[in-house]
Each structure stands twice: as C-alpha cells, then as structure tokens.
Image (cartoon, rainbow, N blue to C red; front, side, top):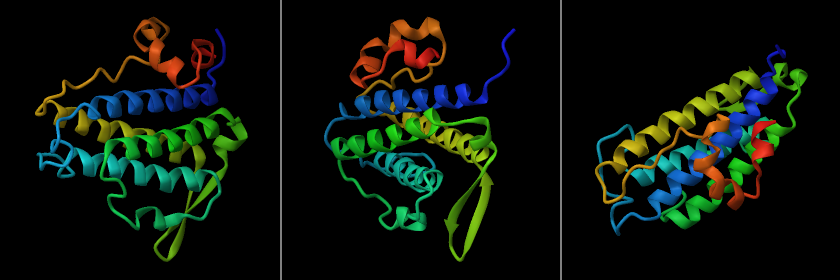
Length: 187
C-alpha cells in the first residue's frame, strides 16, 4: 500500500474547490434579475453577499500563502462585485492561484509557517492548517449559497462529485473548460 501523500490530497482539494466554485457560479449566472441580491435567510443576507465573502476571504488567505502583503486590505470593500460575470472571473483567478500553490507543495512547505497580516499583529500558522481552514471555509459558504438557490428559480447544482475517479463522467466538460485533464486531477 502506498504511503499517504498530503501534498496530493491538498492538490485534489484545490482542484475540487475550483470545480465546485465554477459549477456554483455557473448556476448563479442563470438567476433571474434581482435574485442575486435579494435578501434571504442565511449567515450572509444574500447570494451576492455570500459569494463576495468567499472571494475576499480567498484573496486574504491566498495572498498570505503566496507571501504577499495584501492583509486586511482584502476586505476594504465588503462586496467588491455587483454582478456574477465579474465575480466569477475574479473567483476563477484566485482559484487558479490556489491550485498553483497546491501544485507546488512539498512536505516541507506544508509544515512551514505562513504569516498573515491581522489588525495590529502577525498571525503565524502552519501552511497545512491555513489550507485546511480555507477549504473548509469555502465548503461551508458554498453550502449556504447552495441552500439559498433552493429558494430561487435555479436548481442547486451537484457540488460533491469531483474527487473520485468514478465521478469523471460528471465533470468532463468543466475540466476541459478549465484547461485541465483527468490525468492532472488523479495524479
């Protein structure tokens, strides 16, 4: 039996993250006028607010993982995008940055410390813990958008068929559109 490879696991989670965001945002693009920003019951008051929150938190953590200094400026504008096309384009960019980070992981990098700029202090965390937190954060809030879609004109899309080989039949078009291959996802 081969040894467990945490770098492989994080790569797969990064691909899953990008695929799920792509699928969810494509569904949201089909919302009727007004449904994106209408007040709904959830942690954030709308699909628009929740998707913008996912994006700004991604900007914060991905920049930190890259060694950047964006820090809390990631949150300067609470909802930077008022429309799905602009938000989708920016989410795709940060998702690709996260994939690149995970593609470059080594056991040493996973165990290294990342510095995150917080208000008046530097937060120091292991890279693997920041990645775990970020993927959990994404899943948590995508689930909220998924639930909010149930009360809209758009059926919530399937978001959990990306990690295992058997699900390749469900993701082929999306994988190709992202410029990826099944071989990339399964290595």
